Length: 337
Image 1 (cartoon, helix red, strand yellow):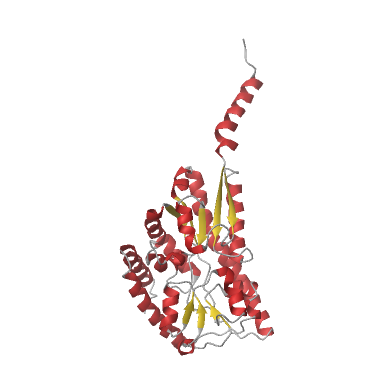
Image 2 (cartoon, helix red, strand yellow; image 1 turned 60 degrees about the horizontal axis):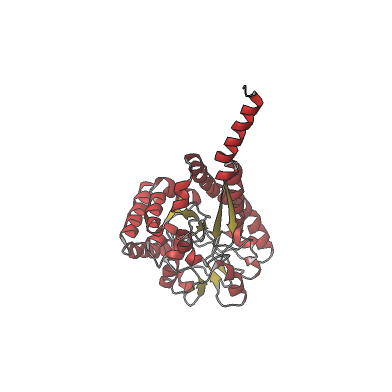
C-alpha cells in the first residue's frame, strides 16, 4: 500500500515537534539584586526577552527583582541548589565566602571606564577566574559585564579624602567598605532595595550605589544634593547560572547566551552614557551640586585602594590569582601608577 507524500510530511512534522519543539523547551528563573525600577534590572529583562527570541523559544527566562526568592547574599546557594536557575548580580555580595569574589566583582579604584573593565572580563582572564571560583558552588558564569563607573550618592559635600571622616555610607561588605574605612567613613551594609529610604531618613549620609544617570532615574537627586561624579567603583554585573542547567544546553544556545550577555554590557553602558548628560543638566538646574574630585584627591584615594587590593589578595589562592591578573592587565595597558 502506497503512502501519500502528505502523510509522510505530516509524520515528519509530528516527529520534529515531539523531539525538538515544545518538548525540549526550557524555562529559567534568574534573580537580580535590584529593584524593578532600576535601569539595569530593566535592561536585564530586555536581555531575557532577546534570548527567548534568539533561541526560538527553546529557552525562556523570567527575571525576578532583588529579594523575590532569597536575599542578595544568599543567591549563590540558591543557584547552586537549583532553587534559582541563575542570578544577575555583583559577586561582592559573596565576599565573606572568598575574597576573590570582591577582587573580581569590583576592583575599587582600578578601572576608569566600562570598556576597559569589560576587556578584563573577556581578554584579561576575568571570566575564567569567575568560572574557577564558582565551580565549588555548582554554578557557572556566562559572562561578567558591568554597570559603569558609579557616582557616589551623598547628602553632604565630600570634596576629598579627608571629608569622609565621620560619614555614614552605605556599602556592601567588601573592598568598598574597606576603602571607606581607610578614608575615615563608617560603612553600613544595606541591600539595594533599602538604600533610598535609608538616605531619606538619614540612617546613612550617602551610598555606594549606581552610575550618575541611574541614581538620577531613581530619584536620589531629590534627597542627596552632593553626588560625587565618576568616583571609585565600577562593579561587575555578572550573569551566573546553575552549572548542571548550563551543561544541558546545546552549543548554539550556549553561544547565544555568551554573546548576549556581552551585549548586555554594551546596552547598559551606552544607554547610561546617553542618559548622564540630560541628568546632569536637570540636576544642576534643580540645585544639585555634582562634585568632581581634583586629580590629586583621586590619586590619594587610588593609593589607598591599592592597599586594599593587596590585603584582599591574601584571602585565598583564587584571590591571589585575581590580584595578579588585574595587575598584569592594568600594567599591560599602562594604567598602574
